[in-house]
Every structure is written in C-alpha cells, then in structure tokens.
Amino acid sequence: MDPIIFTIPGTNFSLHWYGVIMAVGIILAGLVAEWGVRQRGEDGEHIWELLIWAVPFGIIGARLWYVVNDMLGGGKYYIDNPLQILNLPQGGLHFYGAVLFGALGALIFVKRNQLDFRIFLDAAAPALLIGQALVRPANFINQELYGQPTDLPWGIRIDAVHRIGPWTNMFQYPYETTFFHPTFAYEMLWNFLAAGILLWIALEFKKRIKPASIFAGWLVLEGFGREIIEFFRPDQPRLGSTDISYSRIVAGVMILAGIIWLLVKYEII
Image 1 (cartoon, rainbow, N blue to C red):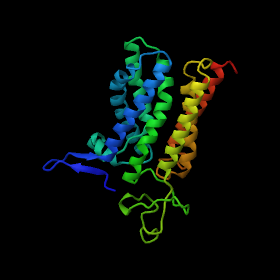
Image 2: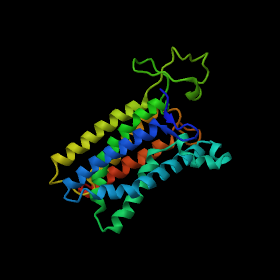
Image 3: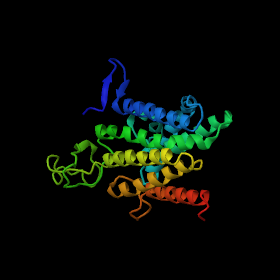
Image 4: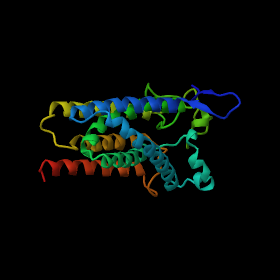
C-alpha cells in the first residue's frame, strides 16, 4: 500500500497516511481524555485547549528523541545531514519523546490556568494508550516497526526497500517465503488491553482511587508492554555491546517509578 495518499500536481506537497491516521488518533484520544476529565468533575473543554500546547511540544519531542536515539545507536545520518532533522514527512518519531515533551506543554497550560495537573494525567493515561494503538496501522502501511522473521501464521512480508539488517539479502530471505513479526500489531493489542484495564479501574474504584494513580498504572502497563515487545525488535539501538535497547531501559524506569508511586501513595511502604 502506498504511504502517500496523493501529491498536489506541480508541488512537493504530499498527504501521507501516517499524518492522517495520527490526526485521527489524536482527535479520538482527545475525546477519551475529555470524557475522563468530565468524570473527575473538571471542564472537559480544557482538554482541547491543552492539546494546543501538548501536540506541538509532543511532535518536537518525538522527533528529537528519535534523532538522539538513532545517534546513540551509532547512526551518523543526522550528524552528516542535520537539516534532515526538520524533515518530518520523512518519518521518524518516538512515542517516549512525544509523551515527555507533550506533558511539558500540558504542564505549562495547566499552571497558566491554575488547574490540577493530576486530573489531566489520569484522564490522559487511557487516552494515550488508545491514541497510540490507533496510530499503529500506519506502521503497517509504512512497513516499519516490525520484528524478527517468524514462521507464525500472522507473519507479514516486508519489501526489500524496507528491510533492515541482517535481512536485506533477498536471495537468502526471499520476499515470498520470509515473514516478520508484526510488532506494531502486538503493541496495538496490548495498548487496547491496557487502556481497558485502566478505564475499568477508574470506573470501578472511582470513589477510592487517589489522584495520579491511573497515570502511575499507565507507567507500569506501558513499560511492561514495551519490555516484552522490545524482545522482537531488532531495529532499536542497543546499549554498548549488550542486547538491551535504550527503550527497554526507559521502560524499566517507568515500571519502577509507577510501582514506587503506588506503594508510597497507598502507604504500603
């Protein structure tokens, strides 16, 4: 499937499926977050005002994280071609950067309007998972974020131009008979499941749950899912000569932070 929907004749402007799907994901995630804010007694319209800050910050952060992650893995493309950092249509965004910088933009909005940041963190937690899941079909269209070769019946074919090492040899790994783990699909399913868990907890224990607990749960579930999926991802930069990716390190920190927050918040430790 062509990742470009159409190109305006006589120009270099192209509309990509990735951008359209991402926009839809942001809107639907915003609706979920708006509902979550209303459930907590706050004005849901604040979500759309908050997104004006969070989305631009998130896009910048997602791009910067991707570039830095690439450099840490030994990549020199952006060092040799620094202007390509600004070439967003080329692709290359990282979810962690989007969350970190998006949260910074959201915090600026919340502080300017004297709102409770914890309410928005809890409302955003399942919304982030749903939005992230909805964007994953774009990875299928772009033939990216796939895993190692597999014999499982749901494996997918990858064109030669989108192959990553060591599977670029089309004679050794023919297109017709070589299938890869659709790790983007695994992540999509996990995101939907994790969002369902958080929404159930938020509704079932609405009167007893403490502020920011749902967000802490997001840290644990998002981190756990990433730890598992990273085992199938050969494209992620590794720490030195180890088999541990930088994303797994961040995921481990997220899990630890979420667990400690919950233990302290509920006076278990």
